[in-house]
Image (cartoon, rainbow, N blue to C red; front, side):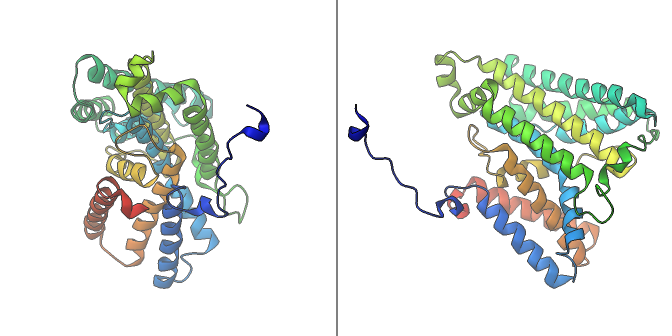
Length: 332
């Protein structure tokens, strides 16, 4: 067919990229702006550049965990990883004990936590694929195993603090700067993860597997390989999050990662990843993480007690899950 005979291509309307239907980032961005506005009304200075930088930095750990959860959800078939929280705790405590406050041990500490995360991912995916255990049950079982292993390893004792160079990740890149080192590191990690999931052969295959596993098998894809990749990748990202969390906080404690399990699931949905699998953008999880961090800060600004904050956050999580998974039109 000659160029003159080609069918005309549809012309995109100017500004169509800001439509919630065409861009999954629009609604979360609007929510973030509105929440900062509400915070400024409640407490002057809430939307100041320094506080914005702090909130974005606090969101980083949850963002990385959300990327882990999103990868598993993308694999479809009810994929879910309830071990992300326990893996965070295990990586934080074991990573700091391996480093022993020495900067020269940081590479060994990183290697140790990555190996731990990968092993958990292998066990999770093996139980799901070869034993036929549903993802929810398998990862719930493994969460208990990981918690037990962490307790046995530490024997309830405190662990050494991280090397001083790692304790600096929460500080500004220079005096008075809004950007913190942890935020920059997370942005770089986000770009790398997005490239792996969206551009690599394995990542593209993961979307196909998540959309329709039977069709993926008929097309010649190794479904088991893709599912194993998802859970191993999730375990490793959760381990990285734990290593960064203990570096940011300065000390580790049992169950310090537990709260990230449920919030990572909700942040995954807000970020645009469908719970049915096969559709979504990993990087959208960063906005979901920012929203939850903002929510916690708003509740603190309102002077709510810790117990009340937990209750309100739980109710809001439930409403978000209902609106995003059962009534998708509300988001559009």
